[in-house]
Amino acid sequence: MQLNILANGPVQADSTSQRSESQVVVPEPSQLALQYYRSGNVLWAIGTAVGLIVPALLLFSGVSGRLRNLAYRIGRRWLPSILLYAVLFILTYAVLTLPLAYYEGYVRQHAYGLSNQSLDKWLSDWLKGVAVSAVGLALVLWIPYLLLRRSPRRWWLYAGLATAPIAAFVLVVSPIWVDPLFNDFGRMQDRALEARILALAERAGIAGSRVYQVQKSVDTKTVNAYVTGIGSSKRIVLWDTMLAKLNPDEIVFVMAHEMGHFVLHHTLAIILAATLLVTGSLYLVHRVAGTLIARFGRRFGFDRLSDIASFPLLLLLGTLVSLITAPLVLAFSRHQEHEADRFALELTRNNHAAATTFVRLQQENLSVPRPGPIFMLWRGSRPSLGDRVDFANRYRPWETGEPLRYGHLFH
Image 1 (cartoon, helix red, strand yellow):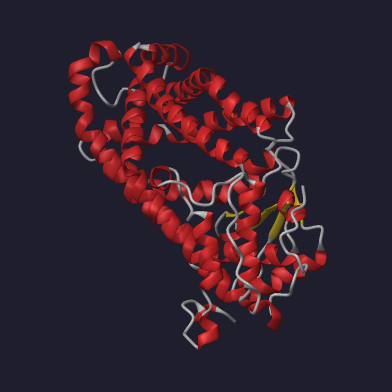
Image 2: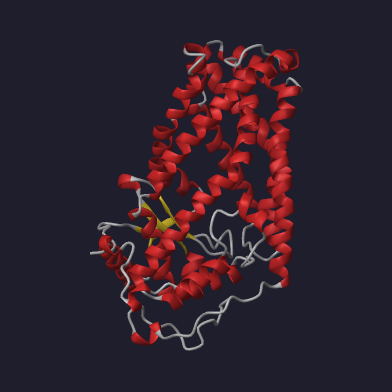
């Protein structure tokens, strides 16, 4: 579905007429969008409950202990047994959460007209996701348990600090080896638009940037773009649905926003923040786990935290800490997104394209422009689309001679 939001057609970012465009009005959400929003809140609550109930079930039923026993019978030695336990745990968890995953990822998206995905493609992606999760957990799970054996008092500190190199490794590997498992990535087909984006990247000070087009239309009708990777694997990725539904000025603004994340070192900030958060969370787990094991150890099937069967306990406590700290984490994410918007506005000076981009995102993705405070506290990783339109309408320091916050970064 094409949207006719720009009544006069696309306008170049540097045109004088662009600066005098009337302000973009935030449209009211459709009834379908409101229904999607409300049902999404219910689904989020159910998903959060499932994320707590499943590890608790595996823990208190003794299933985790039995998975450990099976892993040790097959693996015999410590490290192979840890790897096998990780695989068995992921398989068990995936089967238990399959109904919710199927409803959320397939049934609901089709019910609201947001998906093009066939059942075969959804099932294939789900199986690949389970396999990637199993391999990923097997690669890292031995680290905290080795530290628990070697340093039972300070394991939480060392394991928390290990978050930084692990996260960096994932960011390097994912764009090259993981993401292409699910969709086809390639060079942008619109060479003129690609040249325009690369010229903008030069101005932003990120020469040699790579822009990829991913064929997401086989899965979804929604639109999106993102930055991923670090170092030589960094890239900006555009969904082909966005290329089909946004005009060139709007796409350039989206790209400028994603460039802002690169230039402002948001990925590094996220890694550092995650390291601090994980370290603090593991410390709380360390303080609480001993009491729970002392009280429920017989039901759990283990008497010490260094037993691999304790993993659901770590997961359960970690999920609780994540839920408690979510408002702070999401506030940090919203700040980063807001500053990336500011960067993009200063780089393009195309307020109209910025505002209409957010309107298009609202309509194409069935979003509500001004969700409630509870949503923003526990689900809002970005400023509301209504606030982003308002900011795009009013932020014009270059028109009044005020200094640009990020002007010194432009070439």
